[in-house]
Length: 90
Image 1: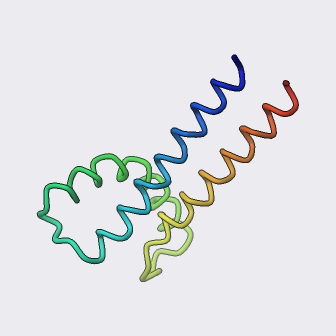
Image 2 (image 1 turned 90 degrees about the vertical axis):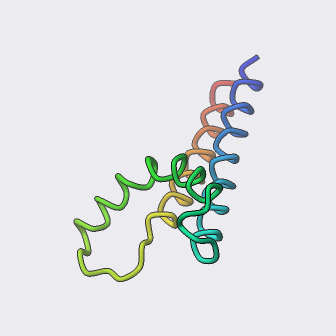
C-alpha cells in the first residue's frame, strides 16, 4: 500500500519534470501566442514564479532565467528524499 502511494507521487513528480522540459524547449522555438505554449505556461509558471523571485533577489542583474534548472534540482531532491523516506519506513 505504502509503495503504491510513493510510486504514485514519484510518477507525478516525473510528469512535472517532463512538463518542465517541454516548457523549456518550446519557449525557445514556439511563439508566445501559441495555445499549447500558453497551456504549458499556465501549469509550469506557478511553480517557477517563486523561484524567479528568490533568484532575482540573489542576483538581480542575471541575464539568464535559471529557475527551470533550479526546479529540476528541487524535483530530483524531492524524488530522492521520497524514496529514502520509503526505505526507512518500509
